[in-house]
Length: 146
Image 1 (cartoon, rainbow, N blue to C red):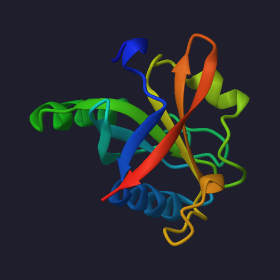
Image 2: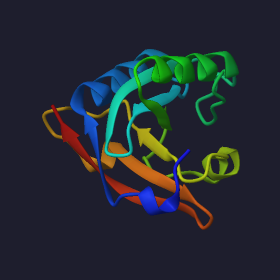
Image 3: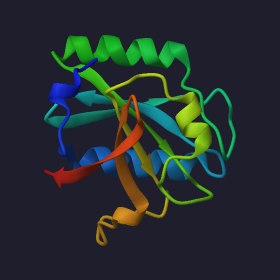
């Protein structure tokens, strides 16, 4: 999707996107939610909800039908799928061993969030971003913008 040269240390994400992901995470509890992130290499502009085919509190699998729909939506808007998101309803927002084993799109953004995230606190303990590289997940700072 992107080359490593385009990977950034800070990535902007619309606050409304984070709020939509958190609402999705809360609605799917006690299971993990999942979805796709649409935008550019500079800015995540949309979250696209996907069905979790595992329906599990510790695992997720994005429905391929939803994945293809997100690709079509991105193209229609002149954007691209830049990554994925999922929630950790039972733990912190660090990638698990299961997350690493299931991740297959190198140089993509993976956002992990907690349903506990509150916009007033803007707490990094409840929201984190990672690039998937050849060496595993590498943190990226998420900068919330209007």
